[in-house]
Length: 484
Image (cartoon, rainbow, N blue to C red):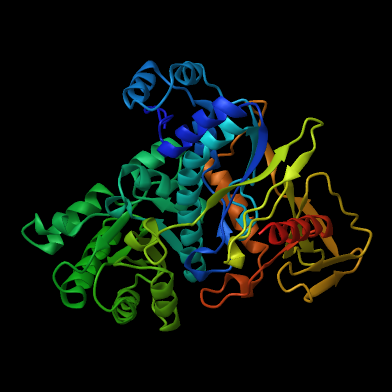
């Protein structure tokens, strides 16, 4: 992000619309919401991620002389508009849900309140940044959940869709709960742990497997993880690893952080056999790690089979979110500001009910059951609405409106999710470190019910509308149906 000017990282129509606004209603202030409609991997939640990179983008949003020359060469932009772009600076307000927060469909992850030209321009970059990292953070959290407390290492750089996806995917995976990454650049950029062992090529480059293991152990006695499946896991790999561990112990080396890695074959069967062999040789504290096209479903299955694996290296299926390769976030106009500072709500209609937008300048409240601090529901309301926790609160499904719940006074707590990030073009938010965001994410995930976290057919968390917002939406829908 720091070495490349990405101001032109946008779809062309953002700039052509921007020129149209410039010619007509350039100063009109609007509200845009960035949200998504469906949880990745048919899960029960998502994890918000990517805010720090979005902030960097907004801060550095400038059009260089080379950018202006390129746009002029397209032959579709007028000189006065290009002159405006040459001095462009974002001047609006942005609110966002902090990274690591558990989020649900239809609620704004980012809210932009700015002159319409500015709000339109930033759409594409916001979507590509937030969509990607939120997708990978969500996938990683599912993999970590399946591992039931075992460490998950992110190993996906070589299979990511390019360097940026590898670097920022590793960042997102750490937020989602991984304990380390093989990506050294990500380790440097984000100050996260880097981890790794050796490849089959290391072993094949030596005359025999034992010599390869012995040489590696001499180099890294305090981080000795031996890959045992190059030739024959149980007849050669594990016995040679045991031989090396025995020699290390006999030479006075304190064995710690040591073990074996399985990268092929029946991981459940091999791990059980290897565990018995290691234990019988006196190495009960040696770990067994595994890789090999893992995802949350395979890890869950291996756990159910009683595998003896205690750490996992997950690459392709996590860094690409292979079963669900896109997050599906969208960016929609929600309101237009009036001369008196109030907002006129706007709505997008669709024959698909899920694509009908929620109008207005909105805020989000998260409602918790007070005694267990578990999420009960999210409530989208109009900006300025407040609620009294000392009073009963009735929430209802905005589609199937006969479904409602009364929360008794004193049994619930509420907090607002959106926080100010930019005010009048100036950043007012300081991003935590990745490891701090990771800790936030863990607390957030702990606030979910187990039923919402299960991998298959999870409970759908309620995202409701306040009475006032529901009435506004209903009124707009009624007016639109009469007009058409």
